[in-house]
Image (spheres, helix red, strand yellow):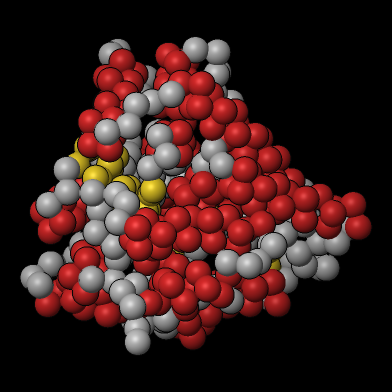
Length: 408
Ligand code: SF4
């Protein structure tokens, strides 16, 4: 007989014995959620821009809602569609981001375990703000919302943010009944520092031309979300780094005859894992994906204050949160940074329908790229709902664009 959360239980059964570091990291997290359900332990919901160190140090079982649904869609292509439809039927407007609609629908369908607590940052966009309000209402769980300053370099902004961030610890202590052990937090942050070091080194190697690997390194952000500060998270990122290093040592590149380098300024299309592999068949490599862009420094672990400050500074730099929480200049700057540093020949914006903070400024972006002679493709595709733009349509748009770029 099917049990509750059967889809995710099946995924766990499939991957739990694996030795592949990325899968092992996922199995650790998913197994933890399932055990928490079966043993009646509290689960904490958090958004994808909140990395997990504080929760790991407090030994609280985390459930990143967006990651739960992304994992579901890897196994059942209709998982997200069913949840989005359930949200629509409940009156959630179609304009809300499909990530948020999917979470709401998954709660309604009871295919995601209920939370005992929720922690969410007001990043990267207003969809998360309103989406998590609905999630809080539906589940009735107490929620801590960290309000994020628009400009971190304004007077008083960092103090304000630090206060907000520190509130996460107080909130979790209050609602879990646990007390932060700062020696344990130090161990966790030392581990996440190692993870970041490997992550940055892997991204750095992607700047090589020709590139050793094409597409997102993915496990970086996955580690941040589900396993930041755990040995499994660090091992997963190190696994990717070692693979890239081995490729470089062997002289093995993503595409033997690299014809064009594409800056993919968005998260991957999660339901279409083959897309970037297909692009390599055209001779196109993707050395940069927004999902991997986490330009941060190691956290100073000498005192509790220095750790909290370092983690708070990193927290506003998580992939997508960094560019989504401020004004459009930062988006343009980051696109130009990626083109320059990763030697991009062109930029593709996979325009997720609700990412209005990005598409609303496409005119400015087009002008900035045109001035510099950088070809751009902006096309609509939903990152988790495959009904908006089909895989075939994506390929047709991208093929036409890349053919033009290669003929230049
Ligand atoms: S940034 Fe885009 S994908 Fe992320 S929550 Fe907002 S609308 Fe959705």
